[in-house]
Amino acid sequence: MTKFKIQNQTIGLNYPTYFVADVAANHDGDIERAKDLIYLCAEAGADAAKFQHFSAETIVSDYGFKNLGEQQSHQTSWSESVFETYKKASLDESWTPILKETCDKAGITFFTSPYSLELVDSVNDYLSAYKIGSGDITWLEIIDYIAMKNKPILLATGASTENEVRLAMNQIMQHTNEVVLMQCNTNYTASLENFKYINLNVLKEYRDQYPNVVLGLSDHTPGHSTVLGAVSLGARVIEKHFTDDNNREGPDHKFSMNYFSWRDMVDRVRELELALGKTVKKIEENEKETVILQRRAIRAKFDLKAGSIVTKDMLEFLRPCPKNALPPYFLKDVLGKILSKDLVSGGFLSQEHLK
Image 1 (tube, rainbow, N blue to C red):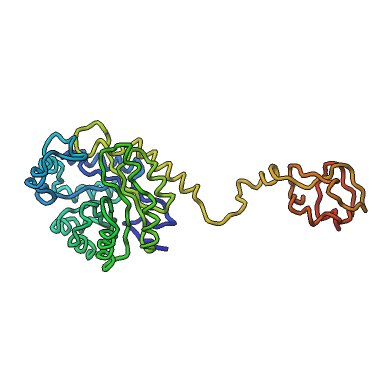
Image 2 (image 1 turned 90 degrees about the vertical axis):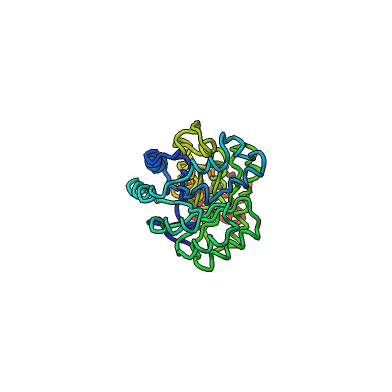
């Protein structure tokens, strides 16, 4: 079974689900706010706090977006141009060691997605794993460059085809098998309509196609129903956006989880993990008493004397079923047998009565 470590935590199907809180642009350009969010992520139960390293010039074309005409999808709610929004959401490289140090103090792992080849080199010494966002799944050059760093990779696969996923995975697996393959849908509007596009069952296909990777979910829907479904299907890494206030202005706040919804998500997943349990069907410790209380035993309808030949009309099947009592599926074995000792009305039949 595939497993590997991210910093000091083991990631794999038989290990606790790993939660990545994507702060993204929710720092609002304030390093102190970013540090506060890291501590809040940790308190909410996140295993990692993730940021995004980019400058507007290295991720979007101002000319390109202006020539698309009107802003589309989630960008329609942005008050400024796409380029200006990304410019304000960019993260100063000088923050990197500070964010890493703060994550260490908070007891969680520092993550980021670098959005240029130069930034990959800039952040490499601070990372124990990389996250490649869905938007870069077709940029095989940066995927290969990151994979050559020989660190675990989380690959999101939103808005992509099977062939595009295969090309990206082939590129990564030339260098490492320590991969989290994440189902994702890249609509950021937080609309309830989006649930029908999440396609959690893609995780089954990923499991068949890539049996030696860890599965994950990068999600942008409200609440955590998709997360529970993904964990049930074998996902063991969950990424969702994180903020302290969904009413703040900014590109990512509205569809993010907050402290309370994140804490609730983690707690429910931990319950689910306990409930999923093992694949062996057996009588569990906490139900051994109910085996006696709820099961029926073969009992005498009336007083029976030793030497009687057992017939069905002498018997009934009633609760409880003490340890030595014969359950109803022994009926065929006892019919026609001779009682070796008396059995009072209502008493249960045991092997001792049939010697």
